[in-house]
Length: 360
Image 1 (cartoon, rainbow, N blue to C red):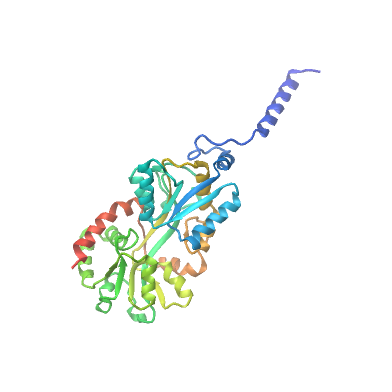
Image 2: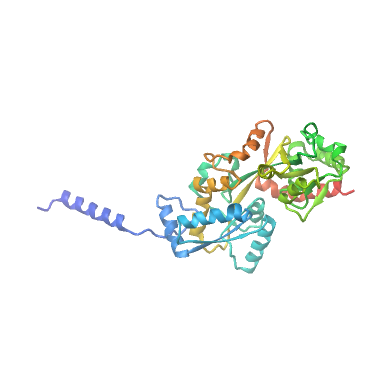
């Protein structure tokens, strides 16, 4: 027998069945969509796109290939095409693509490159629920970048050539005559000599930093522009230099574990930065790009980076055990986080200060 209540119940049940059976749809705004069906929509859109192009400064065999392969295992319908370069090279390549109107990259990652892209006006805003796992201090309030990995910077020293009592404990200790002509730093690098100076400027102000650099100039610090930060550590291991300034603090520990005569000392304040991901204007695979962003920031992705020897940004992912001394050392000194915008903003003026004081 027909009744109004029965009709309504049947209609609701019919609509519920239709809603459940509706296939997932690609999203109109995959970069900023936050609805409950976000993941399903990203997957459906990425399935149609079929690939994502990833420019990154991460070391290929150490992290870039493993994280790309893990992503493709989880999403076998999306091929990751990655390209690796230093951050400056990534920015140069992306800039050329933007000028030509033929953007190839979908996701761009590195230390310093994100803010350069933002300042150039190439970045698009995006949101991801994965950011909830990142401590507030490492987030961008404007939603133009997300942090992939943390980096801490210290001084590498040769453990055979530098006696325990001579290991520098402060920046003033670098002025010891015994180190004259036996120190190097990475010139022309946002994470090398420039960051060394930017860190001191943030802590001490320009006047004190300027005076300090004039005294450091007497130490004849070798400015190596062709070598990477990793290459500076290798020179210390070989005994060519006693110290390498402002290197990635974990690199010497990795070499030490393999028997190399090298270690890291953290000076107060310790500079820290984050690698960032941005999405460029003109990207061709927005759904796949957001899936990759989500994956890299996820517990699974961050665990891969941690196992590769990077410091994760996910608050619940532990740092690799052999790198724990860096985090323990941070308990004895202060960490000074150099935000991506400050890193880019101050790099040029820090270079100017180096030119004014160090070139004698």
